[in-house]
Length: 239
Ligand SMILES: Nc1ncnc2c1ncn2[C@@H]1O[C@H](COP(=O)(O)OP(=O)(O)OP(=O)(O)O)[C@@H](O)[C@H]1O
Ligand SMILES: [Mg+2]
Image (cartoon, rainbow, N blue to C red; front, side, top):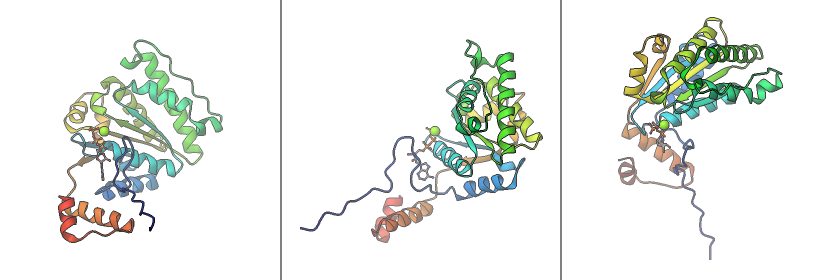
């Protein structure tokens, strides 16, 4: 009896994981890579990714973060559902690169008002972000912050992050900020005062992916697995 072929499903989505093939995102990815290459102040280092639920925002954010990490950047991923500044500060405090550079980042002070962006926390956050970014830039690296679920973020905290990032860009440091969320929620956030800097972010609205593109990616993936699909089946699968 021949050994049965072991089939691996190349499309299998695993919760929270990047699918093996990202359909229809080449443009955004190229833009982002360009921005990394161009240096401080490049427009696509500041990006907002919007779309409906399930449109692929988180997966894209993860992918862009991975690209930056592959290029030696320190990447900090946070969600608007957690205290943003404290979470960024904590991740920086534990970052192995910063530790190896002997850059000491203090842990955030946990206080009842931390997530409300009290003045003391704001100062401390700004100092931490500044120190980390300057050190990373000096060593040929950079800092990328990604904020997912930004529609749930505290407005004050987003303003603090925006101000600090803007300050670093003005200083020509290597920093990037990507934020993603449900379109309406993100637009509400951008309407607020004190957050005008974020309106400059390059906008990427994720629409549904065109059928032909899905079909092309399906065929490529199936054939790369050594399998075959005929045109009718492909059209049906791409729906
Ligand atoms: N470009 C893509 N190509 C193939 N599959 C994708 C792509 N983008 C997303 N997916 C798949 O679609 C599903 C939803 O993606 P994701 O979780 O990133 O959406 P989301 O916009 O973050 O949703 P939510 O608003 O609920 O957080 C996932 O299973 C993911 O693997
Ligand atoms: Mg998501």
